[in-house]
Image (cartoon, rainbow, N blue to C red):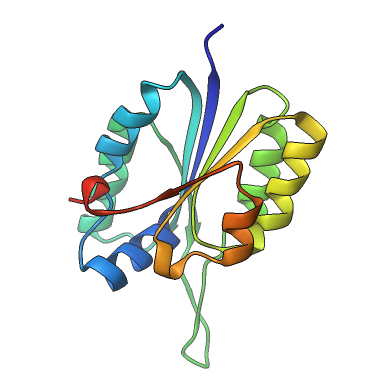
Amino acid sequence: MVKKIAVFADVQNIYYTTRQVYGRQFNYRKFWQRISTQGVIVSATAYAIHRGDDKQLKFQDALKHIGFSVRLKPYIQRSDGSAKGDWDVGITIDVLQAAKEVDTVILLSGDGDFDLLLEKIKKDYAVSAEVYGVAALTARALIASASVWHRIEEDLLL
């Protein structure tokens, strides 16, 4: 039986963590090639913030070309200077929906807020919950809640 896989990419988290630790960008194409050898990718969603600049639009087109659906939220600059553009609830809803129909959920994020989500889908849907994150910037709770934890290292960077 072929394993059915759903992929969820927290684009902002992966962008900032790989940049901070390695000064480089994540290689989504190489990641896709690696995952596709493990089964069939039935859905892959990248969650990003929309600023509308050319570089970002090219990146989003590249993700679509690889096979990702790209979901965008507007970039909101608050009056105090802070920014808003959090996809945690959207990712959670989509993961809960997909977990009913796949064997494996793969989350690209280091955000510890997802630990309870992974515990729930493992328990309620008996799916494997894999996490890809930058070791130094991935929450311990998220690593502990994953069925399989993958470090993002040089081999998955541009």
